Image (tube, rainbow, N blue to C red; front, side):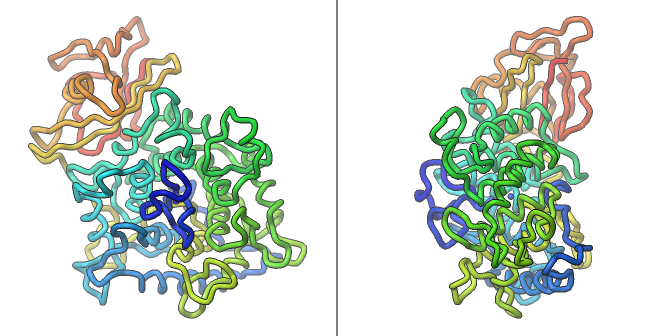
Length: 484
């Protein structure tokens, strides 16, 4: 989904999702993004629930054919791992997808092993690599913060926070690195379904997403904030869908003026005869899939009202019309004669009612758990944790902290000591009082407790409570410190 951090055409081997090398990263949502399912449709809708069900069944069957003999979907260069988010939206658990029925090579286990590899994603990764991994791991039933004792994808994303431009992830010129940060951090919730990152972080990203909305109500992959020329350029169907989803998964209601404006932009691009959205790159399945996923994420039905053309067509009609049946694959463009793996994932996810990820379905494989995750640190094995420090003044520090644990758990004092020594980005923690012991933390970064205003800590979205050095921290915990 997201494009690379350098240009629309570079690093295509990692970030492209469509036959064009100029497409975006390939990244995509908890209940908010993935829960809108097209079921009881009004009589005006042209694609019936039965037709949608058939499209989902055939689409899943096609995506299963993309699995390699060793069970993989992802590898170097262009990959098919976006199938995981489509599978989840369509109700198929990745652990149930096996080559020739060999459960030892199920898609989830093979993908988890890949993500755990020290060399993944490459020697020169970009933030969208980790966002793509987060969204698809979550959909596959792999806790992205606990892929293994050493792999924490949430912490990996935190490392790309821009200190000088709070709210952006990766170089701000590549806006889609930020929109997919919202999708990944907001969409990949905890196993219990809670928002794992602090609201202060979510709010910073939302501010940046809003600032990049073009005058016509759409968005593109490039940064537009503060640039009148860029803001006046036409929006892109693809990134408008992704940006809508980013706002909605962050808690913005679909009645918000920015969502209403984006909805109007999409409506203005509808082709009467087919129900397709006319994208900057022409009518195509992937762009339409992204737009529909944005609508799905915001709880806006793409089959009725504003998205039912005078000719009686909808975006869902267009997607299904470009599916090969019963084989199940989707074309990239209507004139194509063969299916596209990337477009098929985009289209199936959209037709199934999904945003850019979805919570994993309950497996049908006997004994297979819904979730897999590392249970604890491995002593002596380096790892990372995600940390935010909110001093209550509007200044937010975001970073990952690398350290080597000495047991299956650690404590907050140890994590803060490691952060004081080094963090990515730098400067997350400059001082902690007391600097040793097990007691209450009275000062961080020179901000001292005073009266009822004290430092508090939350992990994985839990309620904030008094911060103490001996607070137990487990593998993959997302740590938030707040002065309040």
